[in-house]
Length: 191
Image (cartoon, rainbow, N blue to C red; front, side, top):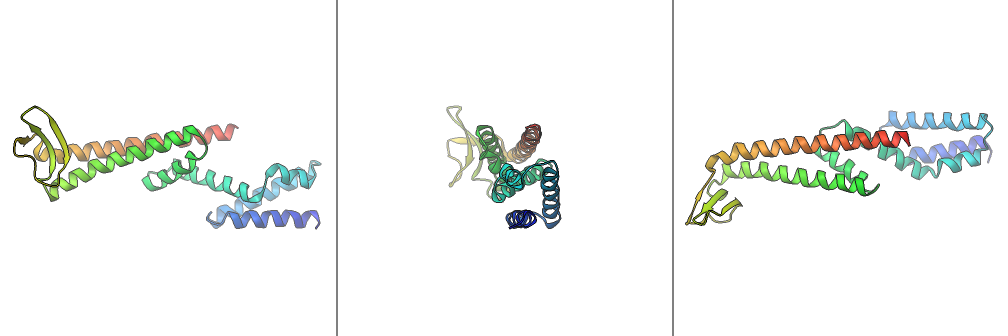
């Protein structure tokens, strides 16, 4: 197999493993990499050493997919895309895992607040914050109406409070994740 056939085989395998990437991005990556390989050859590098330095096309394609996902997520406000990106980021080390935990917990708590607001509208006697005779505050969703020796502390005010807390927490979580992903992309670019 001559050099040109080896390059084409490498690029074909790379293209196959870039499958989920949009076709325009995929072809741009392949063109850019082909130009890089040919430039390195013109500078006197052997094709084997160039391909060895690049690594297996499967791993290179995975790195490109991860990079594109992290870059797309760092500009997005979609919680699902951000969670997917942070899950991928979590596989890269402890800092990625911590970002994923922040994302997961932040979104889980914010969705819980939003559900409390919705459930108060649907079943008001089962959702709320109650104070019993011992000044103990209980907050949550009960299967039965609130205890007879307690009275509801917030009433329907729990709806705007829960909506506000859930929305602010969701926006804050999104901002933190986007910041971490952008910072990670900048650090990776410097390396």
